Image (tube, rainbow, N blue to C red; front, side, top):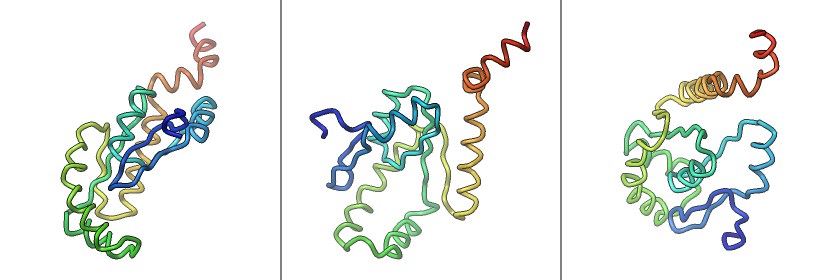
Length: 142
């Protein structure tokens, strides 16, 4: 799929190849819908090259200890995977400056509220409003 160009974005994440199928994203974007991708910084770089006005949100843990505790509580990863992810965490988190917004996920409900606020603000950007309400704006300015 990588060689065929079937991915909208893809990356090697902790030794695993991960990606988002082009067919699941492009029709949604073409229809003017919001698309939320849960991807790492490598995939986000690819998205920005394809969609320059994409909004990037980086979510940080409140501490390295909290990150490790959360990984362990999920119970999804082996000790080797957790160790690999923790070893790579500092490098990954160093890319937060490439994003438009940063959310510190200390209290989950607060982080969700902050994410919703970003969506709302992004929809209200001038260019978004012009695109969405072009006819109405033209009528108002006559």
